[in-house]
Length: 104
Image 1 (spheres, one colour):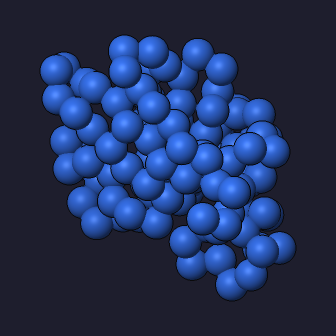
Image 2: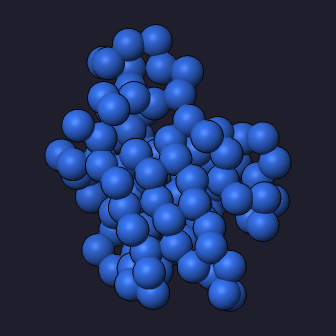
């Protein structure tokens, strides 16, 4: 799958949004972009992908996942109100069965 940001009108806007989200979350701007993530939390299997919804456990309702950022020892899953225009992203620790899938 080719890199995209939900609702971005073109590749240039997608790149601008990605960079702004990374900056807001104090995350490095990565050349390799994550499109999907699976992990365990409190014994439950969780997963999400860019453009889809975050697990309902996190209370984000129908907000799309805008970006999944690799921040070294953890991932930040960003939705509109959790890491994009306000709030803290969903924090996912690396290890413990986390598996990331990258865009082409």
